Image 1: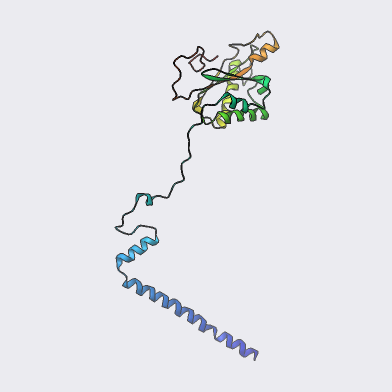
Image 2: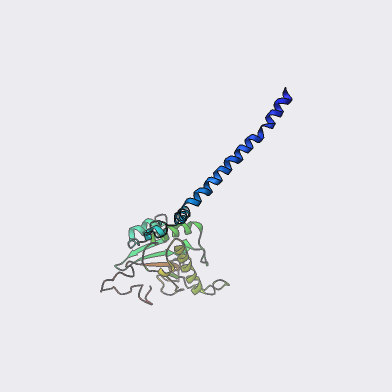
Length: 245
């Protein structure tokens, strides 16, 4: 009985395969028959529709030819930075290490080099970098010109990296500039310079006076380039060529 059951089940499997084949053939012939009786133009319109193309002779709106685009980001510049915003950005800096002054035309930020830079070098510590990055992020997105000037004391320096105080002062200004650019400021907004031991603010005969002369000054123009400045500008505007103090 067992052998007959197995043989009967095996012998009937060809019927299932034949039924499947007949079904496929019937569908194939049906599709061929439908294609033969459909008008060629209608058939082409059907193919175009399947490919995502408009029907032949149909009017197409220009907007349908393009995939909807993501709404453009509003790139409008932020208003000129205020003294309060700068003070907030530098709130974690020791007040003895930074000075902030404001005039009608610009903000002046003085960084004392001994607290921001390694002695005789233009490199900064991680903590100092974070402080400058916060300031750079605050200044970014504003169409304001920025001038960064480095100064040193009158003690000569001479090594492979900095042959003189000119290179050291310019290098420190460049370090601040690179940090600002990294945080989003456009390089076209920034001008740097190195003044070496020129324009001292204190007597270089004392250690304290020399420490005051080692500094980096950041001038932030309060007026965007396209904004007309007041007719009466005070003397000593740092954004006048050759007048950076």
